[in-house]
Amino acid sequence: MKKDSGFIEYNAVLFLFFISAVITGSMFYTASAMNYSQSDKRDFNNKLAADMLLDEIINKMQPLRQYQYDDRNNIIITSLCLEYESYKLEFMDVSSGYNLNFLSDADMTDSSLTRLLFLDNTGAAFTSWRNNNGLSTSKESWREFIKQEAWESCVSYGWLHINDTASFAYRRIYSSFAASDPGKLFPLVNYFPRMNVNMVNPAIIRPLIMRNTFRIERANERTEALINRLSSGPVLHADISSILNISVNHPIMSYLGTKTAFWMIRFTMPSALEVEAIVAAIPDKDGGVQDIELYRLIDRKFL
Image 1 (cartoon, rainbow, N blue to C red):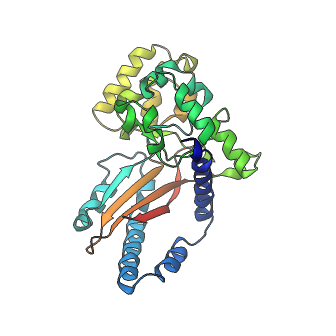
Image 2 (image 1 turned 90 degrees about the horizontal axis):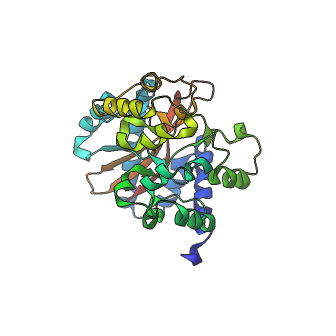
């Protein structure tokens, strides 16, 4: 593990630069085509067809940004999965949960949260590892630190919230990008809520609502009310604040949202070529906290 120190962070920062480049208009498929030219014609054609299909799927998912919340039964997602059933198309939310890269200093001192996530119940071992290895693009790097029952609640994709100035990730990203103004790091840093509550196990939000610093009145009662509500179906962003009896600008609302920031798309071509892609919801810089300008491909690989 020691010999890889710094390598994971290098890849993570490189990935952030890659996202930034794609978002600002670099051509993803141009680089792909250059790689294909070195392969045989059949391989090239199979991969080109897969890229064209992926582009078609992403174009058809664009109306999803107009919905006030995302959930597994959204008509856009379900209709696309049905339309491309022969390709075994799947959509997975890969950003809703606790992103260990982005846990703030306050998160790491919240014993209820650390007991939920970490095998040592404190997060001390993970913090030590992270300080030596930096940011990670894959949560597999964290497996030895996370409780098995919390594994599905951890994610490695996400936008860094602008309020997370007191976090390891914020300090590292600012240092890597040599930026002092958060606005210059948009969209990597923005106001998008950290998780879509409609796509997680409702129980994982308990430590947040119960956190003393959030000062939510009758927190236990309102925690149960929100968990029960989520167990019966999806909610709107306004529903969260209403159930918790807080304003829409309350600090906890930067954690709890109803839109998914990063989707993983998987499908299999007739040639048996498997495709896995990451699509980002690019926030509308001049819109509301959950307004999305468009969905854009940021990464894809052939399996």
